[in-house]
Length: 325
Ligand code: RUB
Image 1 (cartoon, rainbow, N blue to C red):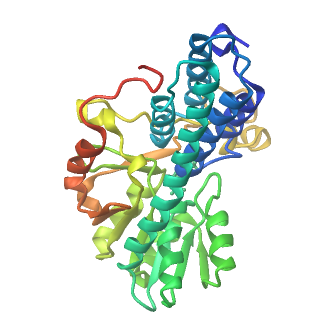
Image 2: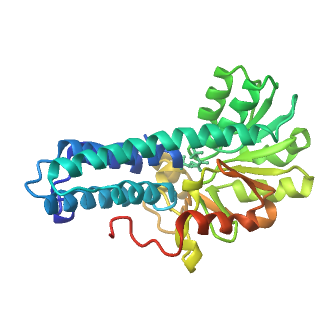
């Protein structure tokens, strides 16, 4: 444990490991787990003074923040919980932090179900929806459409390298949705059969660019060419406030082992350590606003170019690091 992590409870360290290693994944689920971890930190803190308690919570937030860089829902969750930390004694600080984390988690669930109802209005009975990756916000739209009595079919992209399409397909089958699973390379061919492309987001920039699982931008370009509307389902915690002041969204680069096993590497290069064979594994990409038809949030649907208005309303001017006062 470094000094930076002083006083951080094991529950926070294990949530951070779960996020980094993708046992907990997807922007909304990561935010929910981070809020839960801060509540655990507050509950189990043995801080001897209010200042020590605050420092521990800030260290816990830093530990969680350092896991994955792209989904802004993570710093937005941390900031929300830390800003609710109030009180003159450790007991008061504990109670307010726990209450704030619970409020965040409740709001997250409500926002997703509201977003689902709004997104469902775009889907008609009998529509075929193509999905990419696994997004709880995107699937909430399908779930709400089914609850409205519409029958929906899904074409699910496998989503290499981690195959999150399998998770999406499992959930959709649990709801009785007929699923056609395709490899990513087949997407353009199957767009002929799709009425919508429906994806989630890890971050949305002030200009309406959508950062989501690698492959989203190529899918959106093909969909635009084929005249299939692209709908992005994203709660407002996916809005990236720093992009209002010119910051860019960091795209996570993940391990080469997700793409090539050591045995595969040895087969290609003859030698597992051959430096002439390089693998790059970006986890996300950026879809420009011109390829997106609508961003559906719990506050309504927006053309991507106007999302900055909502961003200003919700986040004001600047934000800074989540643990800064
Ligand atoms: C997940 C991903 C999802 C968004 C939205 O990537 O790109 O589309 O996070 O998900 P990873 P949700 O599997 O690398 O975390 O709507 O559930 O927040």
